[in-house]
Length: 429
Image 1 (cartoon, rainbow, N blue to C red):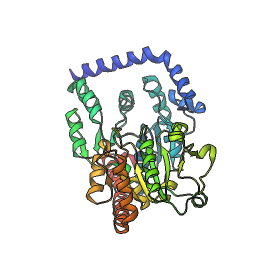
Image 2: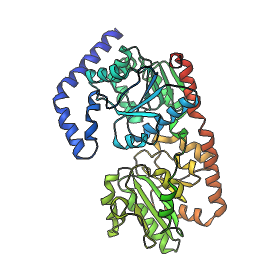
Image 3: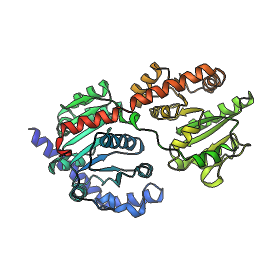
Image 4: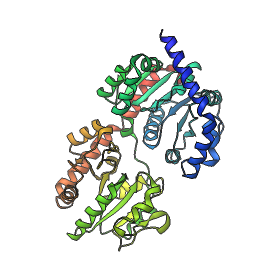
């Protein structure tokens, strides 16, 4: 009966791909126009490689959705190397920002993942001949899993989590349907007990509770010459970084900084939006004509705001900032992970919305390493920033607490890598 339901599901899924395949080139073309695809690497979306592969080496395939998941994948890749894995590591993802991120790591091969048509996925697997597929977090593509199993690959989900919305949607598919898919996964390493329970309710059987790999990624090296040039115009200011901001958040933060400066706090705000194509729109808030890095260069001593809209900047900006505000949290976007700036000994504030990273937020708050606001009001933002600026002991305790947590988190990636290598010893044979 289970086999019949799985066959019925795969037939329906393949039929959907048969119908939409003629429209895929139009979708790809549109994504090129809006800057979401690299035209020279389009063939990767159809399973064709754009680089070579040494077939003598073992290969671990880590699949991720976008930048956040690639950070987790990169963390695990480092963990495998620390656990003495000697083979190759391939990371696939679907966004330009995630591709740019992997360029900082010479031991990682990056390819854009093939779209989930069976023919394209099989072409990809046939060329790369991976020894295992590890799906990061929740980027679940049926053919990616089913085709991998047909090639005899073990399939693992690491740093696994599923949003409440996706969980409800999957439950509506029926237990038997989700169980037939998740039973194909050999091991699920969930981020916490709540996530483990979700996967068990969807029919998964091999579930272990671990932690998020995202918090275990070591800090990247900074560009000291660039930082020196950037500091020249703002060296006497309190530097606040608004990291990964989303629509509507920038205006609240800009208004708050203007009010702080009217109170003679001499604050400078760097805005690093989640989607850099929004930079022009942000620059026009309150008719400020805020400088944008890509077209206006670095800020001067006369500026109170500056927009960083180029890739690969976050390590520099985190190390520069006195205070980091974590975006995606003033409105119900779920909240971006606040753990990364802990590695840079800064002070961290985020808004009330943290649904996507509740356990990390809870751990940071319990350790007094994070200020989480109760609302998105300008008054509360201003009060929190003022407390950090004025109360030096409180400010120092925030950064010390975050730094201690960051050091403890670095062990997570290696521990999870050891678990996977122990479960699948063929990866080290």
